[in-house]
Length: 192
Image (cartoon, rainbow, N blue to C red):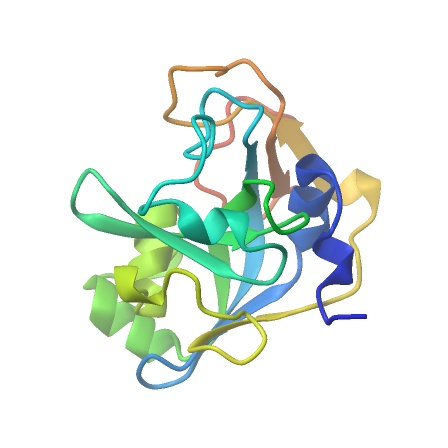
């Protein structure tokens, strides 16, 4: 049994389960966030980086549950994904937003702003965590960015909606966030 057996599950289930868990980064001064928004992607999904199979860029997504997949968005932002499922199946959860718990001063310094804008989007969160492309494929057990499991949320705490900023399979309900959390990136008119 590994620390992340709970992530060896269908990607939508893993994306919901990650809500409330924490990411801890030691890429500089320690920072810690609570995961408040996720999106699910896997190799059966035309919007996924893994849809066309393994490449040098997406290889981390095929490593199996408990690894970090970092990628560059628009050549500017580094986004963080938690790899889920079994090794060989390209599957992962984009961490879209986090709520700062520790090291807020470091996050504000990295981002140049505070409030919810410090971590309320995947690129913002990556920057606040000090994520770099070189971290792709590292272990979330003992790597520079670690995942800490927390108790599952209740179904009534979770809002399900469509993913943000994609053109393919945009209507799939594969985005999940914590109801009423100020750090969620976009709410799409979902009920609070």
